[in-house]
Image (cartoon, rainbow, N blue to C red):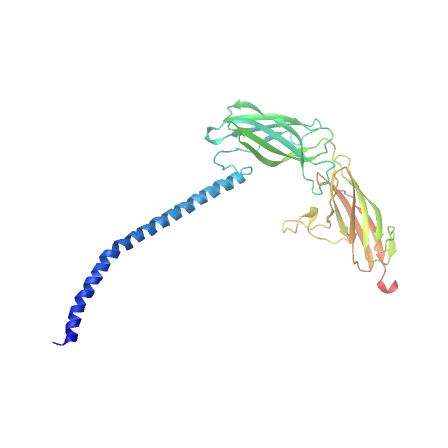
Length: 319
């Protein structure tokens, strides 16, 4: 028998024994590692589900003033407003059915009425709180009942659309502000429309141009004034040469919106019944031009007879 054959016969059983030993030693470890991995995956999935649930709850809390799905708060419907529009008396009644989920009692409900911030220098008419009223529990329980109250508009306030918010405090002293809601219409006066007048027209050379006048400048600045007897001026809308565009009342183009010859051109820096505004056109071509401007009040009534101004720009070779 050759030595090499003997060596092969001896080495084969050794290899088998070594393989069996390694399998017995490391197989439980591998199985244990697999179990750990499976448990880790389950833990991670559970953690992610928990995070998602927490995120949903936090999101609902952040949006609770617009949501009725919060776990500890529910509002059945917006309050009922009567009469609406509010007439010459200026008094409105507010009622609402309200309940708190989880059997939590309501301690108080306060209505904040918001309207135009008269005298403000905010150009976008950010509403200000013009008064509050505390609601009373009229029937039912503090956990599920009918609440009512009334509010009287001060005489100085203009007609228009007023907003309101609800401040609700429960028995745990948790305070939530709901809203704002839109829809209290104050209408104490006969319908009227704002009036608009063009005060001046100054060309790019600083010269005053009269209606129907001539200039060699391609730039021109108009100054105009809007007056409203029962409301406040919200903005001015302008038109040049009867060009029809989208964007009425400053909105972007909308496929459902009808084209309008007017677009917003000036927002007042002070909210009042009489407002001065201006608008500039640059690089206009030679020829006849017509400018029109109309004031718009806080009820979105506009001057039905816009102020108009026409002028002629001479060709550059005739300067």
